[in-house]
Length: 398
Image 1: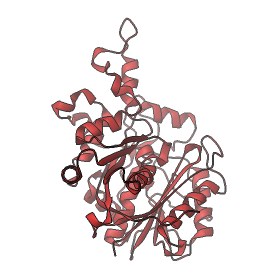
Image 2: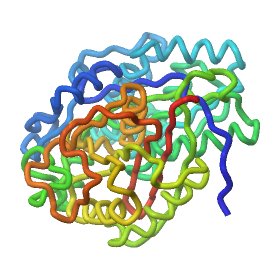
Image 3: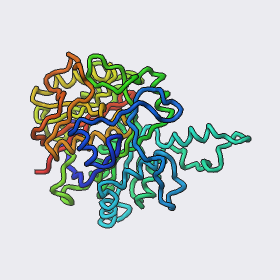
Image 4: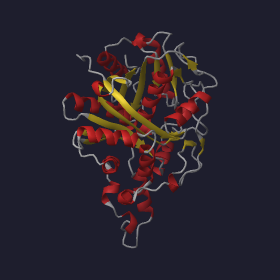
């Protein structure tokens, strides 16, 4: 039986995506209904659909002390860490608790694989990586967390989670357990994924990329749009930040229905939902806003619309925001967690951008246009390949 958890304060957060750098840029774009997707102009696959690209990464420079970590993904991470005074907030937590008592848990689906792709394209005459990319740590699955630990000067528990699109939602659950076990006093959580050929060609091979901007929950939806993003949050015990919004609950489940499709009835997603609500000590009717996973794939949206209809009253509002940012893969969980937190902060429900003709299977819970209304409790859904499901419940501080 899942028992209620002790809430945690989300004392700081930040996000950078195709909507811009920092929380204000994201909120402004959501308010104006301004999406960040554009015709794909990236890499070796510039004709594959539309993408949510972060401008300026090609000219972003890492500090000299971090130069050995240089790659597109780590530039995106560094750019993200510099927004919303997040670096200063982490430095303050490090001074308060000590470098070994601040955990670091980051989600990613591809890490720095873009640099590995480049290395293979530039093999030397002996079949070796070129000298400038002969950096083993850069090509490891945990390169993102290793880079961030160096950038933040943290020496506490450090974990990389790679469970596809639920990666940077699951980091919240792992952080909550670390704090509950008193293995840390605070945790930096988040996720980063950048555009690379691997994901663009991979999703195209699965016939999942839409030819134009994605249309979540539209009756004619025809696939996803890939995006890139970096987002981070600082979790502490409530006593350290009593006025901050709170992580009230988390739920995780695996349905293992299919390698790339969710269970058609959403069994794993519903198990994660039940666990999240139980830990939060809430009923579904007490959730004011649900940020849906809503990828604009046929199967995901059908499953999630059915789950929403059978579990939530008409008064609950729900929308997908991937029409704004694209699907940011391993960073999707943290991006949409920040949107849920902003819904609480601003009493604002973002509209479901891209759905010109709503699927009739969608119930009255859907917010097709943005709405101003009280949001005390917000739920964020993240469902990954292989049935890796995660739900997060956030709430306003009392």
